[in-house]
Length: 419
Ligand code: NIG
Ligand code: FE
Image (spheres, rainbow, N blue to C red):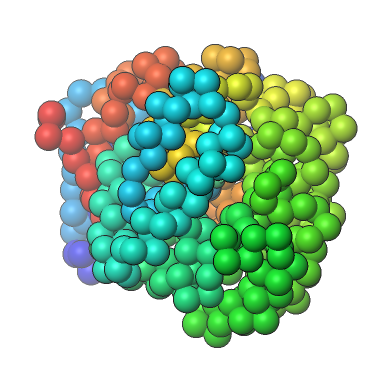
């Protein structure tokens, strides 16, 4: 059974991310820190996490593929980026410069830039071209320790073009070891062809697109951007209602500039409400008392300016907080989850434990993964290793300490050229 077992050790410090509260605030003292460990993986799953001295002989007996580490390393579950738009063509560097010269995101969108510019480029791209772009970006994220990546459509904005995007995401799965979780964001904004007729566009999505996605099993998740200039809480209802009937999970771009989306998210029992930069006391309370994960997207704040989502208040009131990159060409071009999460923690006063839970166990909840991601027997052997003697250095270096190795389903899929 030689090829089925993989072993790595000794690992100076393992953060299994087990035993943490599912919601609310978490102190660093709640983090379990195991020392001098080894991790035995079997058929892509974690088999055992224990003292190196104890399980190395067992791994040898099993004929495992053995990775012996020299120096001090810290291992955590692979990170999850629960909100990205990495299926796109074109650049919005011009928008970025215009914003920094004083124009607002909404003004640029109204002037024909913004999301519509990316729609134009993405519609022109072939499916294969999009496959390459997604795979390239996903593999870059994998090298940064992200082993599960949500990927939205939403730059097609017609049934044919949205299907092209979702099929491209499916094909890209064959070109990256990272798990891609596709989400239909056909209700990203109202396409030009339906200007002034949001209801007509929604009807098209309900009648044609959602059943087809189900039929081809292209996605199990549906998202919408509820915002001034895009969809209102009222006109999005038939879309989410149909999505629910067809068994999709719902997620919402909510409260980015104006409030309203989080109410819809909670009413529909959405798995997550994402953005929340504009959320005030009422929305914070609503989310904290619901089962909808509050997903903060600090990359959008760093891309647009403005305020961060009120993560500290959300956690203190008991919300489940996930943190994602929102990588997209417009509002969040950086795409570096670890750097963003670390910087976000400085501004929102988040403990290391809250940040790390936000990109591992709590991000898994936002994606309704159906399995756990903590490092314990039976869970996927997805792990990231940093060359450092303490986990605290990972966030301290604000994204500049890069992973040394990444394992996905028990296989080493990245190793730095530096070691
Ligand atoms: O999550 N807010 C809406 N959608 C994206 C931005 C997409 C874009 O600007 O291209 C977001 O920030
Ligand atoms: Fe987004």
